[in-house]
Image (cartoon, rainbow, N blue to C red; front, top):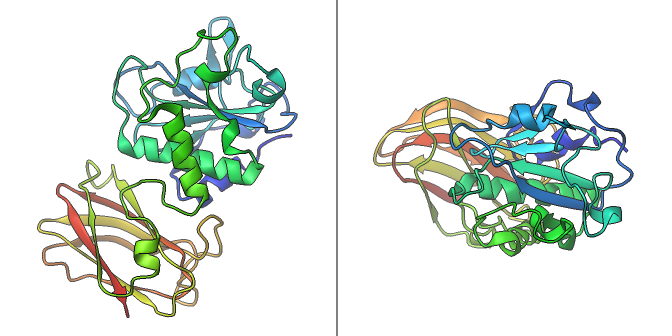
Length: 307
């Protein structure tokens, strides 16, 4: 069993995905099944987005890579490294569930010695695991930290320092699978799905520049009777790289264009909003969520109201 669809599964979940060269032929053999997902930290460098990529892909002395199928950068970028067996689990409490031939391993960048986890990375960790659980039919109870399944007990500490530890991560994953947004920057879907008065979302400052962006997802009800208007506005400059619409929360459909505005794809690209706004878009019925890639030095507002 080779996981050649993994990159598409993660993109369809709205994640930023980098396919590392040769990943579809870089493995230690075929998976026998996918029965669990194991969370790790890299114990890598304290700076940089994913400085451990070379080690995770190519291995280290006496342990040949790949060392995980997936990597997770500090900015929430997912790195797809291998489509098959990777040496990440080592001896486990049950190799028929958590062993390398049955487990997808995710190496998230963190020093593992008390370094804070960025919120965008924690959010992406939960979203990617939720997408994998859904696609490969893995129960949330089989989402484990390396420290929970290693043998003998105490051999590993990762992932260390996650907010809420592994129970918190599993709760976020379950929340996403249950239709919530998983505790990200936007309110739960119900706030926009059933309230057709004006809704004002306050989005925290994010991104570092016009090339180092942050992302916010706005979940919408596909059962609503109205088109919606999205109108961003701030008290200072807000740069929006793209606004993408999705017909389905989890599965990409056709690309968005004039004839198909509800498909996945950018319906607006590369514009700057100055106070008091002055840009707005129409989101047609049938759109389930909107993803916005942006950079702003200050908190900004996003008005959502029926057309």
